[in-house]
Length: 68
Image 1 (cartoon, rainbow, N blue to C red):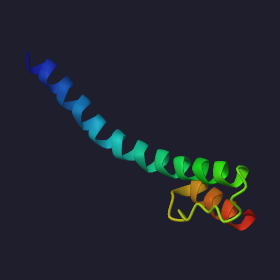
Image 2: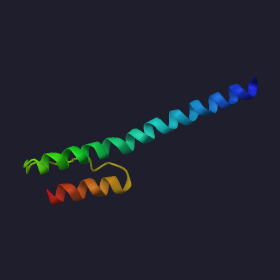
Image 3: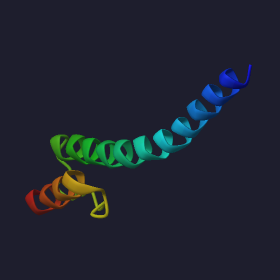
Image 4: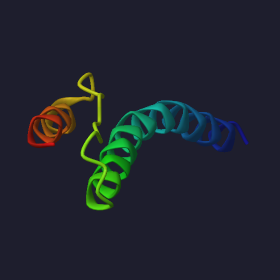
């Protein structure tokens, strides 16, 4: 029984780490996607303004804003 509890606890810890990490990646992608759609619809003022995004996502956000 204690092995099952240990496995359940490890799953909870993994979820507690994975969910915020996933949000940190998904939010910038959602913002970049929304800005790209606005730009595609003709809104030349569309910007991402999420330059604090991690790694390549931050670079992509900066590059998108420079392009737009």
